[in-house]
Amino acid sequence: MRNVSRTAKAADHVFRVVAGFCASSPAVFLLLIAGIVLYQSLPVMHFMGWQFVTHTRWDLGNLYGAMVKKNGVTAPVGASYGGLVFIVGTLLSSAIALVIAVPISILTAVILAYRVRGAIAWILSILVELLAGIPSVVIGLWGILVLVPWVSASLAPFLKSVLGFIPFFGGQVGSGYGLLASGIVLAMMIVPIITATARDLLLQVPLLAREGGLGVGMTTWEVVRYISLPYVRDGLIGAIALGWGRAMGETMAVLMVSGNAMNILPSNLYSPISTMAAFIADQLDSAQTDASGMAVHALSELALVLLVITLATNLLARWLVRPRLGRKKAGVAS
Amino acid sequence: MKRRRRRSALSYLGWSVAWLAAALVLFGLFDLLVSVVWHGVRSFHFGMLFTPTQGVAGGLENALLGTFELVLIAVVFAAPLGILGGVYTSEFAGRRMAAAIRFLAEVLSGVPSIVIGYFGYLLLVLQFHWGFSALAGGIALTLIMLPYILRTTDTSLQQVPHLQREAAWALGMTRSQAIAKAIWRPAAGGIATGLLLAIAIGLGETAPLLYTAGWNANNPSLQLTHAQVGYLTYVAYTYLDQPYQAARNLAYAAAFVLLVVILIIQLLVRGLVWRTTNRLQGRH
Image (cartoon, rainbow over all chains, first blue to last red; front, side):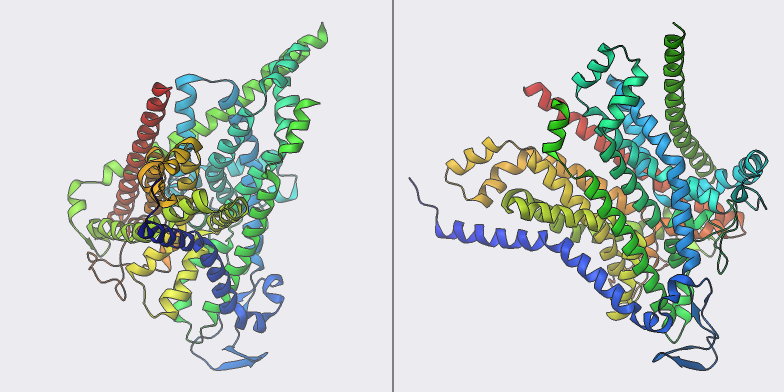
């Protein structure tokens, strides 16, 4: 037997170390992102305290006037950084997106998994994945060209006339730019994510379980409703949470159709809003013009809040879709 | 009898609603493609590819070149990091370590792109004094593409049968020799697919670049820092708000070019996947 040469051994070792270094890069970057964003938001944390998440007024103050000192931090006179409007906007728009996207994607996934096969199934799946690959700017463009005019001319008046007696659906219909349009655009972006995951889950439902349902006289729909969907429930919830995280972090498409509201909470479904992500993207100029640097720190805290919320949702999603082999097997056997 | 009829009616109703939902998704996709292509084709002309932006009109040459420069920089960083990281995860790491790396990569891919952009602004643009620059934008894109490349590399290596590794080790190869000479071959298609999809993602990103790359109406120089670069998605986003038809046309054209490039990459990837799966099926 030939011995492995010393150079080969050394090369193996070097390769291993380099690869290990590369594999650690996601962890390094994550720590770096969290650390920098946290560090840069400290001044505003001192300045605003918890009012950052409870106040609605976002005002950079008089950028050319005197400075005031509060809680040991210097800021322009009249400055106030209250992010509640954006937090509410983020939560509401992503909630609307979920209300629209969840039933549509689950039903589409049922069709993709059980009703089409062969070439058609392949093409339909590719089309759904194609939707996932379309850049958010392009979806935003579609939002401005097609969706917003349609919302203001047809959908919003229709919803108001049918559901207007419910408080949140009544009131001013507005220009079309706002909560409803943002929700629909976000739904468009998370439908492919939820659909693809749900289809893969539904395909894993054992054939025996489904045939058993048919065997006891269930209709095909009842098999889906009472056997397949309950079987994949945990995974579905995880997929939805994943889509939710994506919806909250989405920037460009929302920025283009949200109406960029500031300092005012949405009063109904058609009000202009802004989300944390969209607002950060929108505030580039103010971050550059504020000589005190407080605008940069304030946006940093907004980014931190967004990061924490999306990571929490993501972790929840991972925890829900974690493989539980033991339990799954027991479920099949019983 | 009545009950059975009610149940079969309900079944029909359920399936009809499901088909409607699927039709709605397809309709949304086609409506999007048709409206963007329609506006794009009407405002696009080939001269745009060879003229830089002038004021609110002109062409897209600077943005196109800038996009390619940014994505190229991102690939230069993300491809080695992602591929070697994926190799480590699949081939060297123990079970727990591999699970931890996969988890962290997933978490990184869940970080909103605007947060990555803002992080780039805070660290690279302000702290390192690079200014809005190609390198800052490229690194922001790296963070978007890295977890994707790592994951696809890892998955495609995992699909290589263990026998192939054992055969290579039995010949006296070290682990890295086995990877370099034998194991990478069956996985190469999957890795290339992942890389192409990551490039498609990078091409379409805007949020990470707003705060890192800036905007430039001239063609990109090869200067990495202290020189802003233009990119396509910026044109599509910013010029849409301008009150001039010429500017809006430029935005439509930019979105159209972007869409075409990304669709071509996606179709290429599908073709690649289709070919490799066919070949594998033929072998068995």
